[in-house]
Image 1 (cartoon, rainbow, N blue to C red):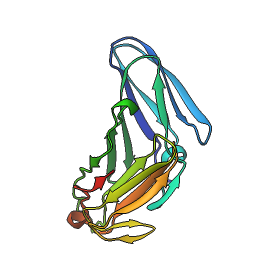
Image 2 (image 1 turned 90 degrees about the horizontal axis):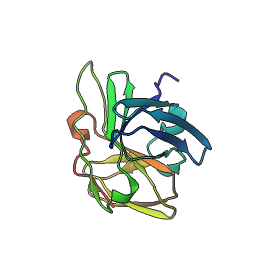
Image 3 (image 1 turned 135 degrees about the vertical axis):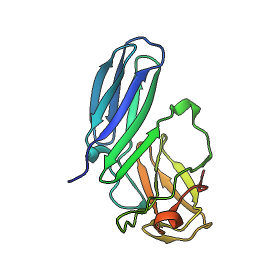
Image 4 (image 1 turned 135 degrees about the horizontal axis):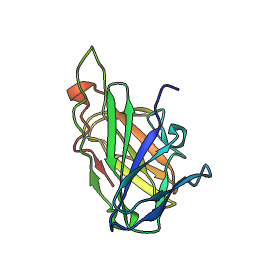
Length: 178
């Protein structure tokens, strides 16, 4: 597999040292690291834990849980050939019921055909998700812009949705997730 592993960056929000564990509870894998108080640390996890290969509303067991002995700040990156995915990871207690996706038009270079994508992770069992895409997406089949699709997920599962249009026509900004 030519993909690089996923990097999770962790920093203490209090300046105190702490222990951080990243786990995929469904797969039964975990990594624990000690974080020094005033420094950030990188935890690298195998892409086999998190990489969603095909756009689908069929949930996959690729969600990870991160917990620590103190308050932390967490962000993640995933580098690929001509690509960088990044996200700030939110703690479960502050999650809301509705999100509007903010992406960017995929770049145009070297005859590229890049598309925007989003991933959704369930934090609870019996999670029902409703997505209304701002542009047509591929999720098992082509789903038209503005047409809501609904699916169910269990704790630790994730789905991956990708725009059909390439470059500027594939910007998923404005997609509504509930």
